[in-house]
Image (cartoon, rainbow, N blue to C red; front, side):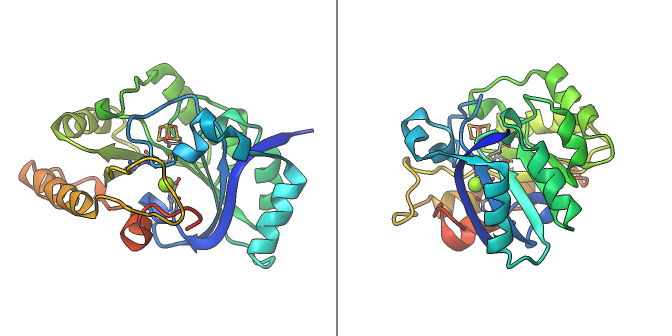
Length: 239
Ligand SMILES: C[S@@+](CC[C@H](N)C(=O)[O-])C[C@H]1O[C@@H](n2cnc3c(N)ncnc32)[C@H](O)[C@@H]1O
Ligand SMILES: Nc1nc2[nH]cc(C(=O)O)c2c(=O)[nH]1
Ligand code: SF4
Ligand SMILES: [Mg+2]
């Protein structure tokens, strides 16, 4: 049986980031990650200190929860985490798609899985220098290949000049993939439902800087978008 370690299931809300921004969605957030980005805004699904909050659930239970939250009305389910790729989500995706639901998944591209091909959209978010993580590009390319007919899009978080320069190189390397640039937010840990404090001025400054920077470079291919849910709700959980 496929047991999933789930940090939270919530929605419907809107997808706040990237290619599907604004689209109503239910989130399934996996607990556990093979990375530890310095600025991760979802530490409650990454840090082992929170592992007691991660609930082992059968795929059927997760699916029932998604169905209940969506009132049985097919929508796009967003799989995130943590890194959802380290868990066996294939059965959930296939079950949901057989009932008319669509699936998008957010992952850093460190762990390829055959079931990526069952997704509608694979969002790959390779990690820039400011994250403190190092990409294994061979693995990353295996993730792209595993997606087969699923749409693949890139989303790169940018905090500073180094990240920006890195994003330009990655964009060159994967020129055929749609690219979304997203200004980073500094979340004071731990992220908490009641205290959703965030450096909103920093996010907006970085957004303006990013637009100006890309325009000055005549770099016209990426979409540049802030995290809409962060603008609306800060770093509150469950939205
Ligand atoms: C929390 S991650 C979970 C999925 C997967 N581990 C990944 O990183 O793609 C979801 C998205 O949030 C982005 N993200 C994480 N922390 C962020 C921050 N502080 N500011 C902006 N985006 C952030 C990630 O780059 C990724 O695109
Ligand atoms: N509304 C909303 N949109 C999101 N897009 C990516 C998210 C994530 O944490 O993966 C996220 C999230 O947590 N909430
Ligand atoms: S890979 Fe994603 S979930 Fe994991 S630490 Fe980085 S941003 Fe957080
Ligand atoms: Mg988030």
